[in-house]
Length: 125
Image (cartoon, helix red, strand yellow):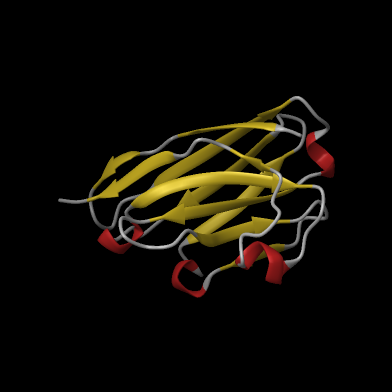
């Protein structure tokens, strides 16, 4: 399993931007499909964005056009650039990875092998 550590969360005003980073160690990062999930208070965890080993990307509808997921295999890091943030984006954001990818399974958050501990993103004026 790969070990994952998120960073970059914090407090930002509505309309602002943040970039989350997730550093991986302990395994060959390039073979892992990676994703960002979030969990808001009182809500279920949801898949926000995913990037495959081949660079294919997926975004949940609510973040399309505002968030961008990317990866740098040389740095063993996956990023989530978040723009035009609103209060509805307030959540704990988790990085996750697995050597196997299925959009339906990742949306169901089933059998994803590696998880970070999360980083808090708060959007508030």
